[in-house]
Image (cartoon, rainbow, N blue to C red; front, side, top):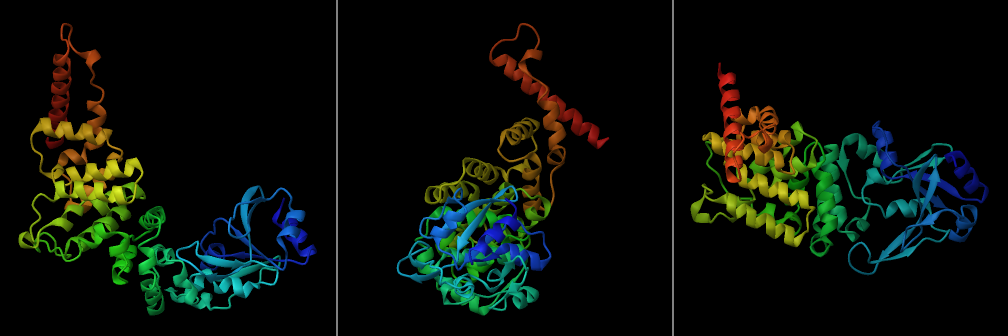
Amino acid sequence: MTETVFVNNLRAAGARIFIVGGWVRDYLRQVTPHDKDYLVCNITEADFQRIFPDAKRVGKSFPVYLVTIDGQYAEVAFARKEEKNGQGYRGFKVDYSREVTLEEDLFRRDTTINSMAMELPEGQIYDPFNGRADLAAGVLRPVSKHFAEDPVRALRAARQGAEFGFVLSPEIKAAMQECRTELAAEPTERLWQEMLRALASPQPSLFFRALAETDLLSVTFPELQALIGKTQPQAFHPEGDAFAHTMLVVDTVAAETESVLARFCGLVHDLGKGRTPQAMLPHHYGHESKGIDVLHAWNKRMTMPKKFLQAGLFVIRQHMRAPRLEKPGKIVELLLDIAAAPLAVADFQAVIRADHHSLPSYLEQAESLISRMQQVNGKLAPAGLKGPAIGAWVRAEQIKIYQRMQGDRLK
């Protein structure tokens, strides 16, 4: 079914149809919009089901249907208004009767830039809360008091600030602060998903700084909050404390790679500094081992995908060691460990470079060194070697490859 057929069928039944949310926002930003979300008004659910008997209802508390439009599944929601009667994003009494208007639906949305609609088929833009002006000014502003009724909206606002490079208005900062108590009780998977989306933004630090500024970092990501105020030697870290350094690293990694996994590793590489005793500052001796404990505790509180935990632990263990290795055997061992890690070689390089501002020569050559060393295996060992002797021969040959390639590089 084409969008035209979809719209005409609903209009014939007396309904109004709109595109809402992010598609309209991005269309007005002149950024390629992604999935369309449709909103219908002036129709009952029974009439909608009669017109589209194959539509699949996916909303539990209120009607949201999946309808195939122009060859793709699209979400079609009924206009609704809500009354808070509990905690979290499920604590609402919802009215989605045919009398609910477009303006009532848009009023319950989070920010003004997400509270615009385009009516079909004419394409007229409805903007009752001046979202277009805020879009032009690059400002995030709440639509109403309803903002604080879903606490994860605070994370979403911080994340959209990072995605778009928008300024958070005083009004939205105040609304975010109102979310603190309920946000502490939110399912951790919602926090994790918002964090991943923020890490995918051009400047992820804006997300975490916004949470810190609104006193939300301590109830969402306390492992990062603990880095604030942990001073560092100014000669090596003129950017400031461990939190400032972490924000610098994650933004630097983001400028080099789109890998969210790499950005996450940049985010967690110095977690152990949050546990440095005050008397030890500005030094952070042993922060690598402490960081491993912190990341395990974070994972226990907010279960991470396995590759994120493994990659984070690997970078925490190696981020101080990697630039300092000198013995060929240890270097070869680390290079092969990097090859086996869930993090791509280039992404490991990006994190170390962001942290130390440069790479040792063996890490600059890491991909070619690993490729050559991996060509050596036990099948190539001299006849007569058995058991551990084969492994020793393989390692010796790999060390020779490393020394030869490093020597050639210096000629």
